[in-house]
View 1: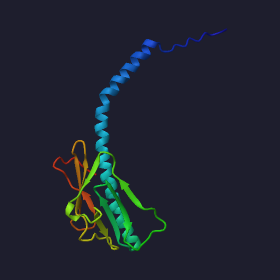
View 2: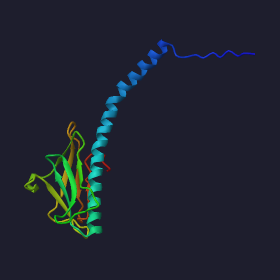
View 3: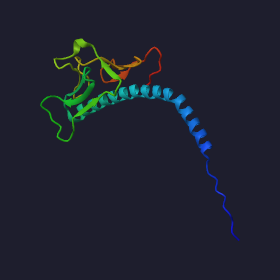
View 4: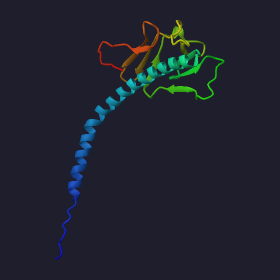
Length: 169
């Protein structure tokens, strides 16, 4: 006894209707999602910077070397290196470039001749008194800002609460 299998596919009209519905949903959700991901980029950059400060402090303590975290707001880059004269043969240089649409702001009075602001971590983990106290990471298109400041006790950095209280990095 043969059974006839009746396989039913989509008709062209059904396929066009489904594609139209998907296009409508995407058109509505894309602006919302793009704002979400832009906000995430700003927060992720702040997290990455804070992680680098923690790593710099850890390296200074574990290697007993003065570590220098440098920030070049003009080029939108920052990185970490040991004090001049010390070389880490087992480490690649650490340098980060800001994500597109972000910029760094620091007090121009503290920039050196190369246009860099510095944070120095001593081998005991403390931050040098001449180090950068505050910097801002700004989203260029909407002006949203995250402020990163030195802790009162000089052992690290944190994100300053904004008036909106919405940043919890």
